[in-house]
Image (cartoon, rainbow, N blue to C red; front, top):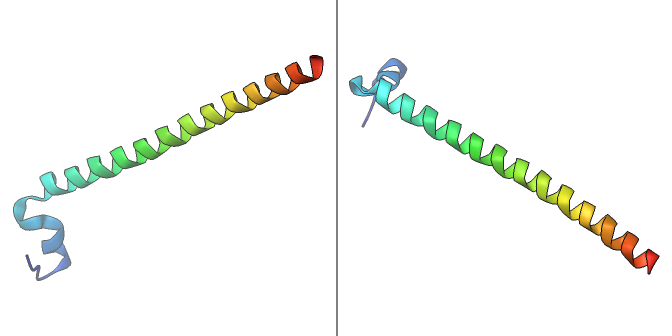
Length: 62
Protein backbone atom coordinates (compact mmCIF):
# COMPACT_ATOMS: atom_id res chain seq x y z
CA UNK A 1 0.00 0.00 0.00
CA UNK A 2 1.47 3.34 -1.05
CA UNK A 3 0.81 6.48 0.98
CA UNK A 4 0.85 9.95 -0.53
CA UNK A 5 1.84 11.68 2.70
CA UNK A 6 2.97 10.98 6.23
CA UNK A 7 -0.47 11.85 7.59
CA UNK A 8 -2.00 9.26 5.24
CA UNK A 9 0.50 6.76 6.61
CA UNK A 10 -0.51 7.57 10.19
CA UNK A 11 -4.21 7.31 9.29
CA UNK A 12 -3.61 3.83 7.80
CA UNK A 13 -6.57 4.13 5.47
CA UNK A 14 -8.98 4.66 8.36
CA UNK A 15 -7.67 1.71 10.35
CA UNK A 16 -5.24 3.71 12.50
CA UNK A 17 -6.79 2.90 15.91
CA UNK A 18 -6.54 -0.84 15.29
CA UNK A 19 -3.11 -0.76 13.62
CA UNK A 20 -1.39 1.52 16.13
CA UNK A 21 -2.97 -0.13 19.18
CA UNK A 22 -1.79 -3.52 17.86
CA UNK A 23 1.74 -2.12 17.44
CA UNK A 24 1.57 -0.59 20.92
CA UNK A 25 0.44 -3.82 22.56
CA UNK A 26 3.14 -5.76 20.71
CA UNK A 27 5.90 -3.39 21.80
CA UNK A 28 4.58 -3.40 25.36
CA UNK A 29 4.56 -7.20 25.49
CA UNK A 30 8.07 -7.42 24.04
CA UNK A 31 9.37 -4.95 26.63
CA UNK A 32 7.58 -6.78 29.44
CA UNK A 33 9.03 -10.09 28.26
CA UNK A 34 12.57 -8.69 28.18
CA UNK A 35 12.12 -7.13 31.63
CA UNK A 36 10.78 -10.41 33.05
CA UNK A 37 13.67 -12.41 31.56
CA UNK A 38 16.18 -9.98 33.08
CA UNK A 39 14.46 -10.22 36.46
CA UNK A 40 14.55 -14.03 36.37
CA UNK A 41 18.21 -13.96 35.34
CA UNK A 42 19.10 -11.76 38.32
CA UNK A 43 17.19 -14.03 40.69
CA UNK A 44 18.88 -17.14 39.29
CA UNK A 45 22.34 -15.61 39.57
CA UNK A 46 21.61 -14.63 43.17
CA UNK A 47 20.59 -18.21 44.02
CA UNK A 48 23.64 -19.65 42.27
CA UNK A 49 26.00 -17.28 44.10
CA UNK A 50 24.39 -18.23 47.41
CA UNK A 51 24.78 -21.95 46.63
CA UNK A 52 28.42 -21.44 45.62
CA UNK A 53 29.16 -19.63 48.91
CA UNK A 54 27.47 -22.40 50.91
CA UNK A 55 29.30 -25.09 48.96
CA UNK A 56 32.63 -23.32 49.41
CA UNK A 57 32.01 -22.94 53.15
CA UNK A 58 31.02 -26.61 53.54
CA UNK A 59 34.25 -27.77 51.83
CA UNK A 60 36.40 -25.70 54.19
CA UNK A 61 34.58 -27.02 57.26
CA UNK A 62 35.20 -30.68 56.37
